[in-house]
Image 1 (cartoon, rainbow over the protein chains, first blue to last red):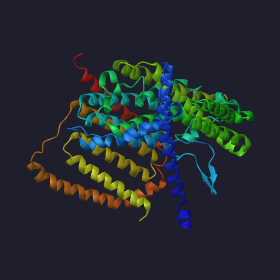
Image 2 (image 1 turned 120 degrees about the horizontal axis):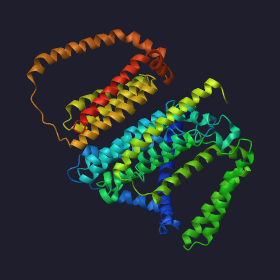
Image 3 (image 1 turned 180 degrees about the vertical axis):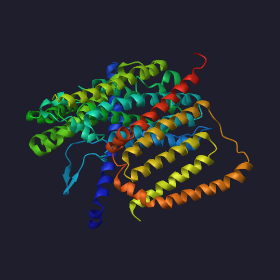
Length: 407
Length: 167
């Protein structure tokens, strides 16, 4: 048994990592729905979910159970094979793209092995992601077509037109970053932003590539079919767009796919433009390494304080428990400096990803939807030219720098 | 059997089955889906040979962009199931011998090219993005630019045809 484990250690480590990442991503997905409903609710002076569990924290579980237990009717006249294939494809492709994201700079030493944070460290990292994005159009398009119903068909058509149009701008907008890094690999892209550790936040790609970031973020929001580009599922016009005819868990699969691609896009924005796991502070400011604890401990204490006054008994038990756990993690980080050093990279990466997820929700609470012709002219007449201009400017800047050797 | 060989056979079978299904499916969308399977299987084969860049571009360009347009047009036209027609006589008389000859030539070419293909694989000509770009933009820059000009002409032609009334 032991020898079998040793002989196949690499494969087993990969399988464990995949299972763990899948679990984390699905949990984060579930709580992202909670977060979104809560934030949008507070923006609209409502409470949001607050019945199931303290502060509605068990709402995602209730939703999940509902999705699993509901009846799953197959409408008459659907194209069976494609109808079942579409949600599978959407979900599988969305989850695959997470595998390419690196989550930390240093490998984890455990059982005498170095385990990278992240599953696949590909030379063609960003290209592989675009390949997956290119295929993920089919999930939506086929769902719309196979449902044999007019609203999904219109939603699917809109979505494929939209995704094809914005894919161009999406791909062109990262060329500037690739030129600066000289590599497709996501780790190389981050490391290229760390050439001047003393500059901190000023060394990130966002400053030279602000045009690229603008194009990338807008195009990526359009690719994920989120507000203000959620025309494929515009409820006032198309009922629910491409997933109108889907119920129960097949609907949940589209839902999970959408939230997973939100996470992927946030990861990509962070990695390509905001320095990935790099700290925004100069490297010599070592006192900023206590920042995770400084955030976690007061937050944990606040949760305890909030919990002991909570109205339900259940909340008075659960919330202080969670608060104690958060405070304890913060304390461990202070007490064990190696752990604290290790956690720096993942901490900054996750913090930035969280900010982008918040921006997604924020936009949903703020912006109205585009009209279809506005969407198309915005993509083709503004984003594409701007992203091409960005490529030209970046290329000439790099050329000028190498010719005159200005540092 | 090495894992590489096993993966090769899986992908090759997938590609052949996809190609057969492309021909025998009655519905255009199913045919298009089969073609996507062929494209992805081919990308897998490129990946197996270490040509990462070509594999990714294969999926992005063929699997993604081009096939999305196919699917989009089929959806837009709402093309229904095809009708089966009887086997054409010309295809029976001329087609089958020609197909046999073609297969024979292909088999001979593959049998002969064994060594050169291995050599090409080992030299790593396809290996990385840098070498491909050196080839495209240095060694073969004029044919490459000419081809892009050709595609531009085709695009202009399509626009002129589409807008004939207005111009």
